Amino acid sequence: MAPYHIRKYRESHRTQVLDLFSRAMDEYVPTTFRHVLKLPQTLVLLLGVPLALFLVSGSWLLALLASFTLLTALRFLSKYPWSKFKVMCLRTDMSDISKSYLSEPGSCFWVAEAEGQVVGIVGVLPVEERPLPKEQLQLFHLCVASGWRHQGIAKALVRTVLQFARDQGYRQVVLITSVLQHSALALYQRMGFQKTHQFFFSLSWRLIAIPSVMFVYHLPSAQASQAQE
Figure 1 (cartoon, rainbow, N blue to C red):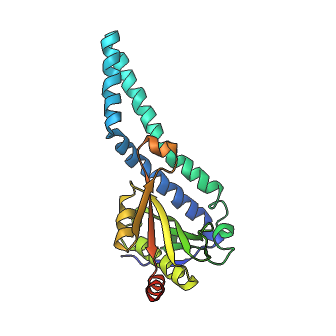
Figure 2: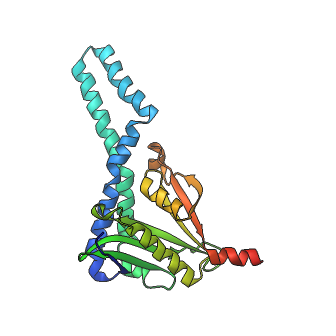
């Protein structure tokens, strides 16, 4: 395993961080497309519409054209939510990472570096709508470059987040991911995160039947204080 180092984000990392984040989002499009193709309603659509057109028109060419059009539309439908999410992030918190994650106490952004390249990222922000200060810290944008996965980098980044949360006095670390991010789901559960609920982030995610999953990690110090109470 090649050595890597986790350190706080610097502006010199910006281009590589944004490139890694964008590529990570794009990687989910093929997985989403395969998921959409397996949905029962998709199978009915792909079989039913071309068959109906053939029975009405008697033209196999028209049926094939309909199939191609439907597949193109489904591909767009699979890509749209990820593209929309990526653009939203690049226009909000990722547009100025230093301002979003490093300008206030209780938040941070880290990169994992190896061989002079950024190969992993993660950020945290306090959950502001909670009634008590320093109650929840939210994890954002955990990504590892495809060529550097399965080397413990994601786990090390999450451990960095958990240690930061302990040091800052937070009670819980929360995060949101999708049901298609299988490796991330397995990692979080192995590390002690607990699934709380599922929900659809927007209508576009509901249309392709991909809910988001909320996880929470109860910090040991918080559990101990609750037990004493």
